[in-house]
Image (cartoon, rainbow, N blue to C red; front, side):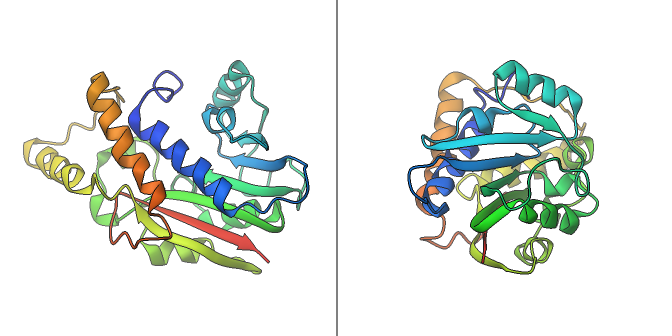
Length: 236
């Protein structure tokens, strides 16, 4: 991940979408920077690309991930959801959980732990893989416990005092070719490859533009289906 996430279209487009959601849904109070907690921050690239006026800290259960965060020069510490979170409750304007919940047995407990970090009016931005019917050995190899529907994601995020600001499928435009590729792998034999390769430069750039363009539609135009789901929940 550390080697490819700077350039790979899926990572870079998702970061652009998350940055746009932060700008749209975070409530600014005066001139102070908005505080962001990236829960399950991985190698720290989201924190490295926060919009202007935002400052962040990450937590992750992997010591290797924390080492890579420090290599990037971002602030991160070791933690284990849902009970071992060494951050001050009620002190963040937004919490990011980018493709984290699907890795955790107690996803509702993990979401509740993230919500506790939010100040009043703060937002939780969560992304997850969508549609159980798309399950493949890729999910198993990467430690996924489940894929989500809108209903199961909303249930996992159902915490007292939280209201839904956005719940949508996304990665919609690339849904048809992705499903076709999954069908082909099943027909030809799913070998469960784990290597994540950056495509040829022009292909990578085109895929990044297509995926990232959905940030203009989220919450404004219904996206009926997609490879992933995104939710924005606001604390009362």
